[in-house]
Length: 129
Image (cartoon, rainbow, N blue to C red; front, side, top):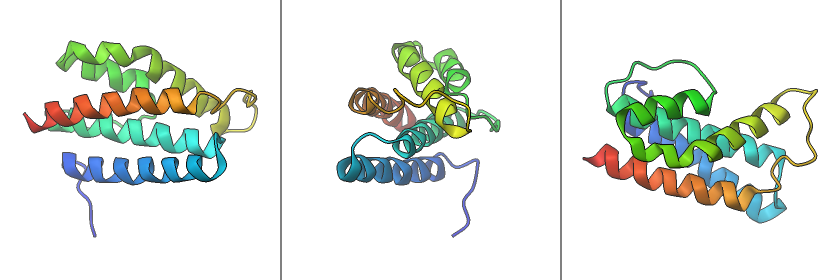
């Protein structure tokens, strides 16, 4: 199957896959660095899918803060997720390359996951409109 970067549904499909795997990993092993990376990748793809649905030209970035700022320009309700995106981005970078502080990475997985779920619900409502 070939995906299309200009298709919001392709972004959402790839995001949902990562979210499903993050949840399965958490259910089996609890909090983990890999789970944080998967959550981050899911959030990134959901935000990119929303932005693409609004005519945004895809930018290769892993910075949820940047993506959220773009989303806020289109709908102020995204501001609610600023702290969650900042937290998830910081944790993503801590575990992504050696040299980061790993002690607290993933400890707040349930809270991050709840924030992400609320953001996904907003994205899906706005993308359907």
